[in-house]
Length: 461
Image (cartoon, rainbow, N blue to C red):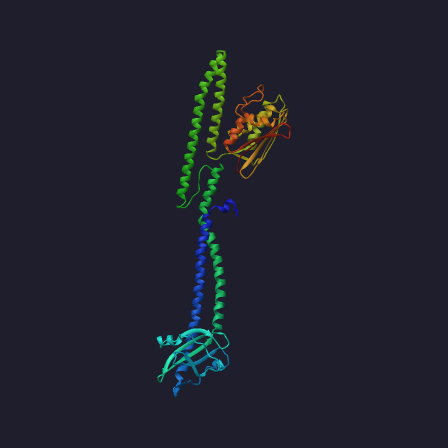
C-alpha cells in the first residue's frame, strides 16, 4: 500500500493516542467482563441461598419409615404446578455408589428426574456440611440451577435436590451486559475524545516549535521567540544557538569571499596593465590568460557567495519589485534600440533568497534578451509547485538553434564575437540557479526568439 509521505512517517501524536487508547480500551473491556461475571455470580449466589432455604424446609420435615424417607407437605406452590420451573426430588445412594430417586418428588417434575453429575455423591461426602451447586437441564430441557445437600436421618443417608429455572437470572445478566456495554461504549468514546485532546494540547508546544522553525526557514523570522515549557525550552535554545552559529559561519564565508576577491583583483589588474603597456606576443598571451583568470575568479566567487547565502538564514525578495527595477533600467540602457519590456509578475510572489542574487539571475537573462531582441522582450513569473516558481524571459530576436543551446551555457562561450559582453550571462544564470537548487531551460519563444526558463525557490507571501 502506498501511503502519502506524511502518513507513512512515524507520528508521535499517533503513537501516544494509539498507546493510550489501547490501554484504556483494554481496561474498559476487562472491567466490563469482570462486572458481568460479578453480577452473574451475585445472581447465582442469591438463587443458591433461596434453594438452600427450601432444602432446609424439606430436610426439616422429612422422616424415615421402614428405611424409606418421606417428605413433608410443603407450602411451595410453584413446585406444585407441572413444569413450573421449580423442582425437588429426594435421592438415596445405591450399593454401586450411584444415586436413585425415591418415590417422592415435586409434582412440577411430572414424573421426570433431575440429572445429577456422576461425582455428586463424592463431592457431597467430602464436606457434608456444605451443599453442592451445579447447572443442569430440567424436564423440558431448560437450564436450571440446582442445589444438592447430603444428610443422614436416623442413620439413613439422604440427598435432597432442589432446582430452579435460571432463565430469569440469564435474562437479568443479558440486560446488565447490554446496558453496561452501552455505558462503556459512551465512556470509551469520551475517553477517545479526551485522549486526542490531551495529546494535541500536550504536544502543542512541539507544533508551535515546528511552525517557528518553518518561519525561520522561510525568512519570516530570525530566531525562535516562543515561550516553551521546561521540557521543550532546551531544544528551542539549542536551535537558536545553532541558527546563530550558522549565521556566523555564513558571515565568515562571505568575508573570506570578499577578502579573496580583493586579494586577487589587484594582481590581475596589474598584470593586465603591465601587459597593455608592453605590446607584443607575450603581452597578448598575458592579457588573454589574465582575462581568463578574472572570469574564473568571478565564476567561483559567485558560486561561493550563492552557496553561502542558500545555507544562511531564510530571506524573502519580492520578484515583482526586482523585475520592475530591471525593466526600467534596461529600457533606458537600450533606449536607442527601442526595446520594450512587457512583464507580468504577481505581487504575492517572493523569491527565497537574497535580492542581489535575484537581480543577477533575472538581470542576466533580461539583459541577454534585450541584447539579441529586435524590439520586444516579455517577462513572466508564476508558481510552479508548492515551493517553486518559474521565471520566463522571451524575446523576438533570431533565437538559438537547439544544437547550440548547451554550448552557449558554457562559461564564457560566445557564439558571436562581435556582440558586446563577456559571454558569461547565461552561464552566470545557470550557476546561480543551480546554487539555489533551480534548473535552466532554453527553448523557442512564442515571440520568435529565445525562451529562457528557470525554476527557483519560492517563499511564502
